Amino acid sequence: MKIQRFKDSKIKKIMRKRYKIIVSGKVQGVFFRAGAKDMADSFGLTGHARNLPSGEVEIMVEGEDSALEKFVDWLYVGPERAKVEDVVVESQEIGGGLNGFGVK
Image (cartoon, rainbow, N blue to C red; front, side):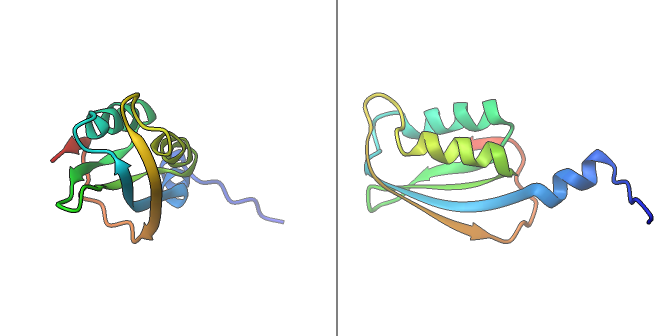
């Protein structure tokens, strides 16, 4: 039996995911995007958050599966002044091009 060894970077690529997330409720004007940036930075995630004209916040985020899970858990709560009603998570193709986490 042959054992195949992978370099750490190859394993991380396999475990990486990208999500498009829509958060609804009282999520604008309550520092939701800034809080999302802080959380994404702390979990080593890349992407961005932006307000939508509908009053929702859209987040495009990429990173390791375990970090994404913790990030999404936080989105259900948000910052202190937020009142999150719904979080819709849609898997996306990993395409790269996301460096750091920005607020638009």
